[in-house]
Image (cartoon, rainbow, N blue to C red; front, side, top):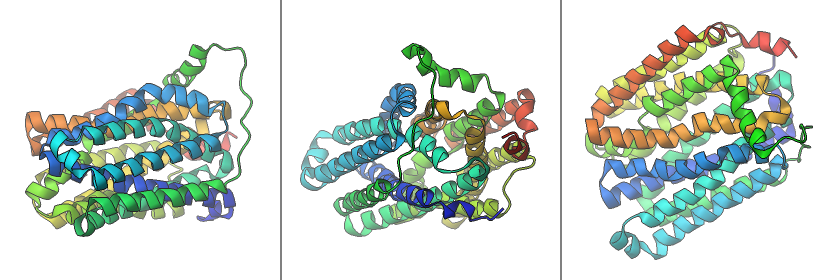
Length: 413
């Protein structure tokens, strides 16, 4: 297969680069908000609350937003959610530029409130864009599209934190948020030119509750999908320490916001390298074993990161975490595209977002809470240990994922 085959599709090019700029902006915003709140509070738990503020609305509306993505044109949802991101980012720019004394005197409740509102937009954006991409690309190119989608997402995740940290460090918080707004506008303009796709036929006469629960039932009745989602969810929930990177950067590695940007970008750099390798050698055979090994390697990388006090060693270990993590990202994405019926993609993507998307924010809360209760380094060691236990459980109780071959699934068309 031509490793660049999917780029021959114009709609895919527009869509994936539009998503690149949206991701670039949101990744920049994450590091800006994290450093801003840490400067205002100097409290590791307050970093965890950022994730919780976004996860609460995201969790509550995910099943409904997945249902909406199966009954409303998906491009329309992607556009509206992206516009909502733009509004919330502009609000962060305004309060940080013109109401900085308010933040100093009244705390950071306004920032948490805006992040909470952006979580609503994210809840609609995630299932719609995932289902939309599956309509743009033919089935036999799903592994190729998953690989490049992951690569381009991670390139944005590399450059976003680096740009955000550098602009924050040299030009301040106001300029940083303004750059976020500009990148969001570029992403929205690219989305405009992607063709809308008709919705697939769906069953009529079902109750709203039946429609909302259909995605959950489908996932929990499919051992392969459930195992893949559980592996990624618990690895992100316990195994990572992204929310604590401002503390590692400021107190252990002593590299400031500029260094924090590179620490945040390192996992994505590793993921991009692995994506390029997977584009040429897609994990179509022994896919389940590769998935389990990838999650295990992710946990080992973070375990060693917790023990490191050298900036360059820590940077390398975070780079390795991205290498291993991207193996599971590509395989999981391909599994979802191959095994999900067209008329349920929105709802199954919503369940995926419950497992994976919310685990980033809840994982941030867990990291902040564990760091307060156990201490910074023990909390990361604890999380890595939990990741190993999850991998062992899936290996023992889910033989279908252990023996998975994506090439066999593609041939079932």
